[in-house]
Length: 97
Image (tube, rainbow, N blue to C red):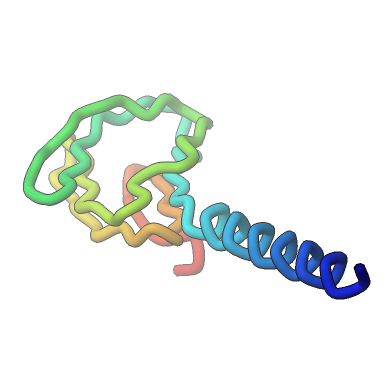
């Protein structure tokens, strides 16, 4: 009986740990400027386009990595799954930079 409880507890810990890894790997794309920006996100050579509005953030973004480009300036940054990319004064940068 005690062995079954320990086994279930271990399984629960493993499941929670795996779900935390998924949460940690979620990318964030944030615009701290008041103006919106059009962007291109290229994943595996396939571009997709969107707009990030002023003072907003997109969560769960580029979860497998992508090339992120601001259309207006042409600036491109390689975004990794764990990155937090910020637009600050029209410039893309990692939150830690």
